[in-house]
Structures are given as C-alpha cells and as structure tokens.
Image 1 (tube, one colour):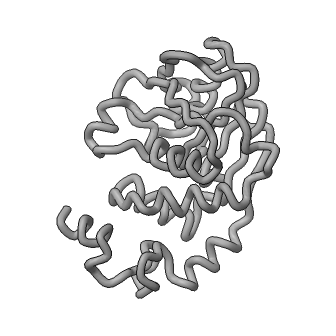
Image 2 (cartoon, helix red, strand yellow; image 1 turned 60 degrees about the vertical axis):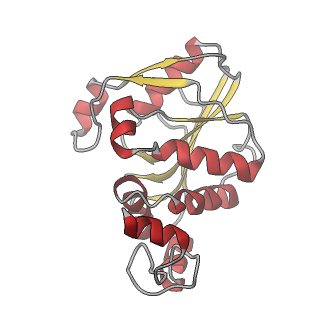
Length: 207
C-alpha cells in the first residue's frame, strides 16, 4: 500500500502500467503502449436488451485489458482518468448526452476494494464532459460475475434497483462489457424508474 501511495505521489520512477518499462513522469503508459492503445478500434452496436445503444472504446485485449486489470485488481486509480480521457476523445458526440450513471458493484465488493471501478471512471468522465453524475443504481447481493460462464451470467443476472430520482436520459458507464447481463439489469431498473433513453459506454468489450 505504501508503494501505491508513493506511485500516486510521484515518488517512485514512472513505469508503464501495461509493460513495466519507463515512461515520462505522471504518465500511465509508455509511448509504445500508448500507441498500441490508440490503434485499438472502438466497437459499437445496438447492444444487450433494454439498451438503445452501446459503444466500447476497445476490445478487451492487450493494453486495454491491462488497464482494466490495473484499475480493478491493482487499485491504480489514476488509470480511471486515462480511461475517461479515451472515452471522451473517441465516443460519438451523439452518445455523450444525458446523466452519467455508473454501473454499480455489489456493496461487499466495493468495501473489499475500497472503491468502485465504474464509479471512478464515471466521475472522471463527468468532470471531463461537464456532465451531470447520477449514482442512482444499487446492486444487491455479493455474487461476482467474473469467472462465470456466459450461460451462468445470462441465466442469473445481478439484482439492480434504483434509488432517488432517475434521469430521463441516461448514459451508463462500466469498465467491461461481457455478456451484457449486468447492463440489461441496469436498463430494466432505470426504465422501471422512468428513464426513456438508456445508452451505455464501456471501456472494453469481450469478443
């Protein structure tokens, strides 16, 4: 943990999160990995049931996958800013509207990590876009989707409910799109709470 604080404070030599090579002070990626990430093609489509549109900034592979792992499992929070920057830069302007709503993590997972990856990305994106942030979703239970087979994810989606006021136009934010079961559960809850438009952006998508 001390090493993490030192990294965040810039007391340790800057190392690329993806490959471990040296990079400029304050950077998350080295020049080579930054170039590889820039070459990754975004993915778009109608998306899972309940969503009007889904867009992902990259396939869940190579440097993009390393960034997700670094944020979720190594607790390197500066990665959320880089992810938000890529989304703001590449996402279609027509999609970047409405209130930004982070896809919720189960409370037990958030407590164990000490943060919620999707919320970190959503906060950073809302700041860059000067958009409203509305954490109006809650997720029940402590079950993890990570490691489950596709059929299990679809058959047993997470339980999601709303809290407080639900925006009429919503842009869901998450780190990874796998089967879409979690996004669909969020969309159902939002539409049940009065949302008319529900779109989603994820940093990566598993193919």
